[in-house]
Length: 75
Image (cartoon, rainbow, N blue to C red):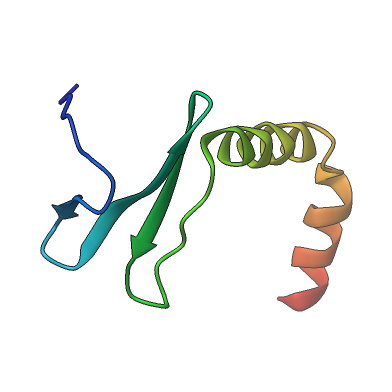
C-alpha cells in the first residue's frame, strides 16, 4: 500500500487520466474529489463489497434447471 500525505487542494494522479484531490478536511473526515472519464465506475469501498456479496448470493439462488430448460428451448 502506498501512503501519501496531501494538503487541501493537492491531488494524486492515477493511470494518467484520474486525479484524486483533497477538497476538505474537517473533524476527522476527508472530502475527496475525483476527476475521471465519465465511463469509469467509481464506488465507495463498502458499496462495492455489498454488490459483490449480493451477486454471490444471487448466484447461489439461481434455478439451474430453469436455465437448462431455457437453454434447450433456445437451441
